[in-house]
Length: 306
Image (cartoon, rainbow, N blue to C red; front, side):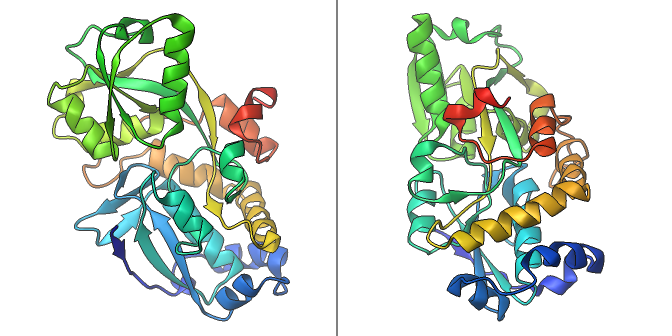
């Protein structure tokens, strides 16, 4: 497992106006040893990804971590603990849950679905993204629908809910295909890029991000009917309920002052590093509804609030 330590004082990253509004939600140190330690200037470990653009990814040789959820995590921590220092730790889909659960990492700032099973281990903040499961394929490949995957080879990432959704869709529709499992986005895309698979199935935002960072982005397409929609949120320990209260209060402030929409536009509808590509993924109606009525409903109950 890789970890990269980058320390920064929060006063350089967030405006005084945001501090003033967000700190009203956590004016006094709650009854939480962890929050008190952070607020006294302790270190907060942010779990990030190397290749999960635009949610959380590395620039250069892991010299800097950026992305929609990485920046959101930073703003949350800046608000609840202005004196805290930040340390970035690279996580994978496979080790995120145990490392958050045992306190090695304090937050997971990557893209992970809120589910009942995961709620048994960690706490989720309010929903801040809604993903739609689709697939990436080469433009030269005629595949346009999941039903066309019958008899084909498909790449997916171990530990993601997209795998479960894909298998359920296959069972419900009587189609069979060979699934090649990868450890992360880059490895899965390499399977597609090298022609070893016909499609790569994952959340639409993740697919757009990995295509944008590829050698020839123009050679790939995102296709297929939406086979699943999932609420995405940052994660943290459930051992101290005061942390969730503080996090959710700050997220509500970010929604109320328009910062979430600005962050979304920055990472999904404007050119992003390293290739200055625009993902062209405007905010969808479901996420707009989530922000108008903030909640932390897990994926199993998500259809009732969509």
